[in-house]
Amino acid sequence: MENRTARLTLLIDPEKKAVFEALCKEEDVTPSQKVRQFIREYVEARLGPDWRAQQDQKTD
Image (cartoon, rainbow, N blue to C red; front, side, top):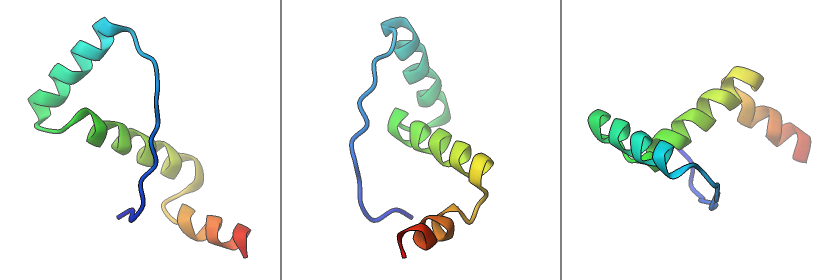
């Protein structure tokens, strides 16, 4: 679980936003939770589930 937060601002078509929010509500998740899930899945698909360890090695 992340212990820090950073803001991500994006622009989206208002109609898509409304549909996205409705779909999230059906799943009983917030849009922020769903976006974090999308990002986590994308990063893990590209770098693997141990991506944090890879990032730690780059900063050492």
